[in-house]
Length: 142
View 1 (cartoon, rainbow, N blue to C red):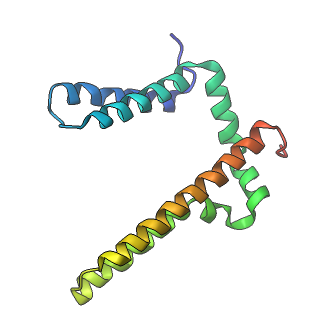
View 2: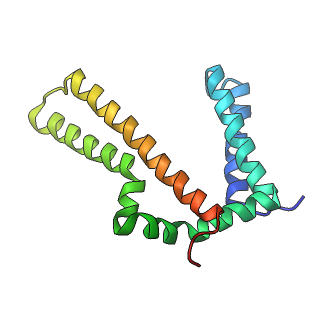
View 3: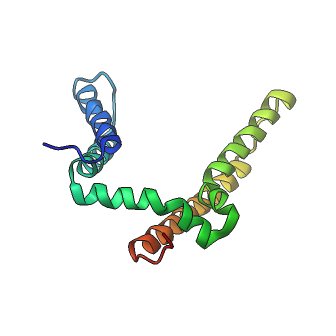
């Protein structure tokens, strides 16, 4: 057995390590958490052990930043990480309000935040998909 992509293989083993913890009841989980853990372990182990998939991932990693800059300009990093920017901003503001003013954030603000966060996640994923598609089609410079 040859490992072609060591980081992915290690992620796969990490997810695989969680399964005995679930099975012996050390960590109590629901059925859907089992499924997600098995799916991630399978995906990462496949990437780590498959030559073609590891080459594909290396090609994406090698060209991702330059293609993102080419397609979306100098703010590509912010566009791609927009959900994290929103999440950190909301967390900082909420924490500040809670600690300084000792106020609770109303539920409608939390709902609005969740909606904006969901939309930004889909936006970021669509940009990521376009970048990977651009790289797969070989239209990147490099």
